[in-house]
Each structure stands twice: as C-alpha cells, then as structure tokens.
Length: 89
Image 1 (tube, rainbow, N blue to C red):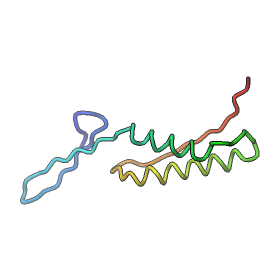
Image 2: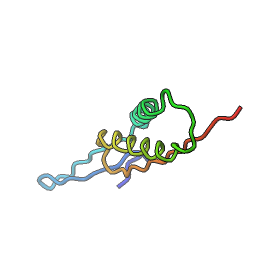
Image 3: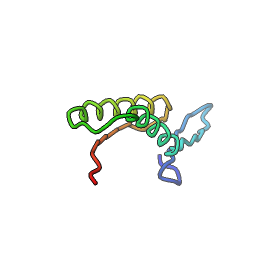
Image 4: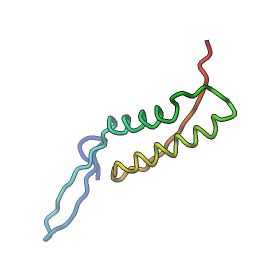
C-alpha cells in the first residue's frame, strides 16, 4: 500500500489483530554520498583510455551496487547504469 507520499511505503503487520503501520522513506542524499565516494575512489588519478572504460564502468557499477545494498533500504531494487566519456575541448 502506498503512503501519502510517493517515496513512502506502508507495511502492515498484525499483532493481536491490531494493524501496525510502518513507513519506510527513501533518502536520495544517503545514496548520492555513497555514489560520489565510489566514483571518486575509483576515478582519482585516472586518465581517459577507451580500452579500459568498459572494465572501469563495470567495476564502478558493481562497487556502487554493493555499497548501496549495505544501506539496507527495504523494498527497492537497485539498478546501476554507468557511462564513462571523454570531455573534449
């Protein structure tokens, strides 16, 4: 059942036939910090090399996914898409 906000979910648990309503809220700021840390740790002191980009993108995606799983956010499926490109100038 959805709560009054789109980012809240309700979970009903019956204890002695009395429904208990628990809200779980998703905080994007927590996930954003984890993503930034994973990217900075992996990409610092790197230069663009198209031969290594595919492997680096997969490594970054898996690192982010594992780090976000450690946050124990209930009822969300974690999907990570990573793209590495060169800034031309």
